Amino acid sequence: MKTSNWLQWAMAIAVGWAAVGTAAAGPKIETAPDRAKTTLNPRLRQIGTIKPRRANEIPGSNWTLGCETLDRDFADFQQYKEYIVPLGIKTIRLQGGWAKTEKAKGTYDFTWLDTIIDDARGRGLNILLETDYGNPIYKGGGGWDLAGGFPTSEEGLAAWDRWVEAMALRYKGKVRDWAMWNEPDINKQHKPGDIAAFNIRTAEIIKRVIPDARIAGLSLASSSPKLLEDCLKVLAEKGKVDLFHWFIYHGYAFNPDTSYQNVEELKATLAKYSKTAKMRQGENGCPSEKATKFALSNHPWTESSQAKWDLRRMLGDLGHDVESAVFTICDFNHTGREINRKGLLWATADKTVEKIKLAYYSVQNAVAVFDSTLERVREPAVAVMYGKGTASYAYRHKTTGRALIVLWDNSGTPDDAFVTRPAQVVVKGLAMKDPVWVDLVSGRVYAIPADRITSAGAFTIFKDVPLYDAPVLIAEKGLVLK
Image (cartoon, rainbow, N blue to C red; front, side, top):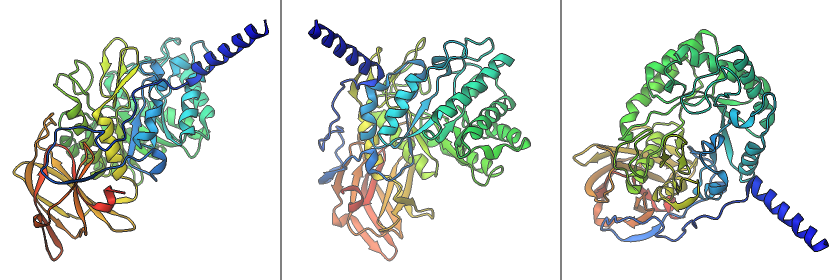
C-alpha cells in the first residue's frame, strides 16, 4: 500500500511539473563549423566560422525576438524555450492575453503567463509585453484575435482598465518594457483618433502602477508616415506624446530594403513631436515557404531566401538606427487561417518543433557579431561599384577602433541562389590590419588575398569582393573570430 501511494504521489508531481513547463525534447542545435549549410563558393580560402554567442554572453544588442501568440495557444513556449538563449537575442516580445487570463468575469488566472515570464527572467531575458487583445466575455469587450476591435462598451472599457492594471501590478518589478495593442490599424473601424485615445488610456494605467515603465506606442502594422503623423497629432493635442519611449511600426516588404525611405520619413515625422522618443520596428520576418495568408504571401519563399531576408531586415534596421524585431522564434498554427511559417524553427500543426531552419543559424551569426560594443560610422565611409543597387554600412568597435563593413546586393527580393558577382569596394578612414571576408548566412570566414587589397592614404580598395543578395562582411579578423 505504501509503495502504491508513493507511486501515485510521484506520478502526480511529474504531471504537475509537465503542466507548469517542462521543456519538450526537440532537434539538437548544431554547433559544428558547418552548422549553416549552403552551396556558396566564393572561391576564397576558408579560415574559420563565426562562433555563436549565448544571450548571457552578449552585453547588449539591437534585437528583439518574437515569442508571440502564446496568449491564443497558437504556439507552445515549452516547445521552443531552450532555443532562445543560444540564439543570442536578449529581449523577447510577449502578448498578454486578456481572454486567456480572465475567462470568468472578475477572476484572473495568470498561471500561464507567470510560467513564461518567470522562465524568461530566469534565463536573463528582458521582456517586451503587449497588452492585447480583447475579451468576448464582456459585451463590447473587443476581439480576442488579430484585427479584432478595441473594447467599445462602457462595461468592456472598464474591464479593460482593470485588466491592464492587474497585469501591471502583477509584473511590476519584472517587466519594464510594454507595448500597446498590436496592429490596431488592420481593423479599419479604428481611426487615428481612436488608436491614440486607446493608447493614452492604456499607457496612463501602466505609468500609474510602474512610473519608470518604458512604453512602445501605437504598434502600427503600417509604416505610413501619414498614419503615424495623424496619430501623433492627436497625442500632441492632448499633451501625451511623452508617455511613450518608442513608437512601433511593422511595414513588411518583399524587398526589405525598399522600406527605408518610409523609415527615414517616420523618424523625421516623430522628431517634430518628440526630442526623446524613437521609432522601433516591432515585427518583421519572412516565411520559409509559400504562404497564402499573412504578410509576404503568394511568393515562392525557401529557407534560403528566408535567411537572406531576415538578415537584410536586421542589418538594414541597424544601419538606420532603428531597434529591430525578428518575427518569430517558431512557426505557429493560427487557428482558422494557416500555419505561419515565419519562424526560425519549423513546427507541426500540433506545435511540435521538428526542425531548426537555416535562418536560425544565420540570425545567430548576425547577433554574435553585431552587439552593443559596435557603433555605426555615420559619415560616408564606403563606396561600392557593382552594376546593381547595393546597401552598405560601416561600424567601429567603441574601445579598440577595429572596423567592419557590411554590404549586400539590395536590388531585388532575396532568392534562393548562392551565386556571387565581383564588386569593387572603396573604404575611407577605416584601416584594417587583417581584413577577412565573411558570409553571414553560413557564418564562414575567408582570407582575402593580399593582391586584392590596395591602400592609398585614407583609402583602402578591395578588388573583386564576392557580393550577392545577402549580407557579407569585410571585417577586422578579431571582430569575427574570437
